[in-house]
Image 1: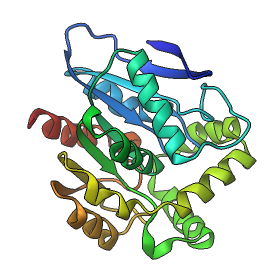
Image 2 (image 1 turned 45 degrees about the vertical axis):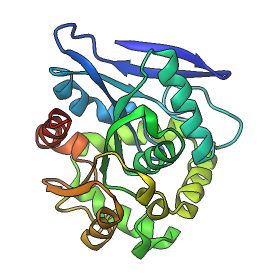
Image 3 (image 1 turned 135 degrees about the vertical axis):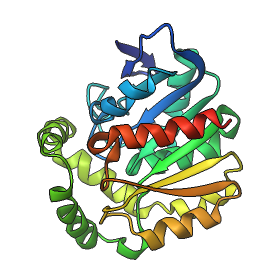
Length: 246
């Protein structure tokens, strides 16, 4: 089902599972990447909803949520996410992020650690070995032919909703962020996931990130940068096993 929730003057759109037979705790929240929305998280959400309560919000500025006059900083995005969780009656959750969504989650974890059970960071950006606009765009271009064609149209639609200015501002925020400085402060179990064919996030980078985590491990899955859409069965299986291990 779809929901719209007021949070600090913003309207947050979310997709939420409606399977009453699913396990209600812990809740699993899926966080999308830069310029996109919760829509490309749906294939994974559908599979996880058989077992858990699953929610996938559009962050403010993206998808069907409110469009602030400027791109929100990572602390602001984390605060809105925390407020939204309170409004939908979730005290603690498992957060699963893709790409820039991992940066939002890392910021959230430093600010609200008591509200997290476990974290899944899939394709965490920004890889420090390509932390420039030119290198990131080059890697993005390499990733395109490795993803499923329907995602091109889905994401193009979302990029249009986001707009060029907001997308560029958010990209600059992502480039300046150093996720590697935040992960050592996350004491909860954290699973880092990389698609085997992901050109955006290197194997060297994810190994370094995992090594900084007090309670982290790394899994390599099929697919490229967005297995949440291109390989949802494999990705959901990894997430399901990790959540059930709690």
